[in-house]
Amino acid sequence: MSRNVVTFHYTLRDPRGQVIDASLGGDPISFLEGAGQIVEGLEHGLRGLAAGTKARIGVPATKAYGERDESQVQRVLRSLLPIEGEVKPGDQFRAGNDAYAPIVTVVGVEGEELLLDANHPLAGVDLEFEVDVIAVREATPEECEHGHAHEGGEGHGEGGCGNHDCGCKGGR
Ligand code: ZN
Image 1 (tube, rainbow, N blue to C red):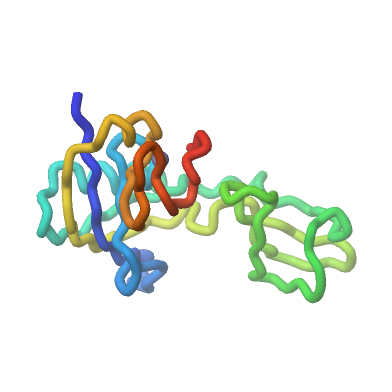
Image 2: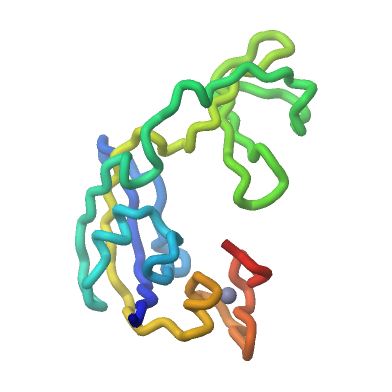
């Protein structure tokens, strides 16, 4: 079965219409269908759209970053954390060293303890994507094997994929 690589620009808004994120002004996003590279509901909404299509795709939280889980809010001794300097509610940092470590948000500071929320910052938020499909093409066998699109950068040479995040060392 053939899979597609879809390239698109997006503007992401929360239910109040606030822009959370947008690709305009930067490179468009490319993803390999069925690889879990973008949130499930967005991928579903993009499926079958041709290049040149503009669309609004509403994605409920359950099909995006999931519902909030209050057990993910925990009290942690500040000294156990890799942080320095002033910490205040709203600060965010990665809970580990690799790029896929979850981002935690400081929701409270109580003396030497911090109240940390490990829910994804967009957990429980219904999302609205405004998308502009730039290109749709068939994925290469190499992309299917790697499980991601090789797009959006120079130097996708033979047997590698240049400068995208994963560096193609097994990736995700
Ligand atoms: Zn790759």
